[in-house]
Figure 1 (cartoon, rainbow, N blue to C red):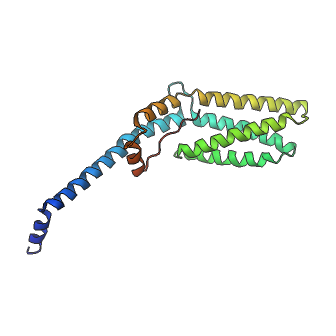
Figure 2 (spheres, rainbow, N blue to C red):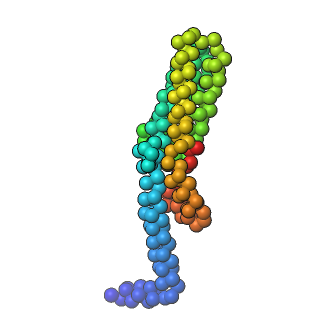
Length: 190
């Protein structure tokens, strides 16, 4: 009992009370940030993976784009184009990130930009080859599929949700608090 008296004396000091109050306030703000913005970010991520109002899922369209790029890569291998392997590496990385359904969208966004670049490179290189008639049809079909996937990604309602979120919350102190609790800001893919 004698030991608790000095402890009570220490806790009754104003500086200790202020420190405890600051710790409680900071912890509460961080927890509120985590739950509030975490829920909003989860809703946006759900739109990314499962579609929003118009039903267009960015993830499924990225899969369609990867499918088209894979066809182009296969065709490029037939014509011994070195760029085919680079495209396959990006396609594999994209598929792996999409399988996780918890990936940081900024990582997926970087892969998307690389995938677009590889797709356009393959399209350009293949267009300069003397393709058989059948291969020319395959090229045309893959180009069409890639264009449809990119257009669907560009027009997804997911982007509206991300823009609304960023317009409202992409500023100090929200971004700082969000990063402190491990939240990543969603990315626009268009």
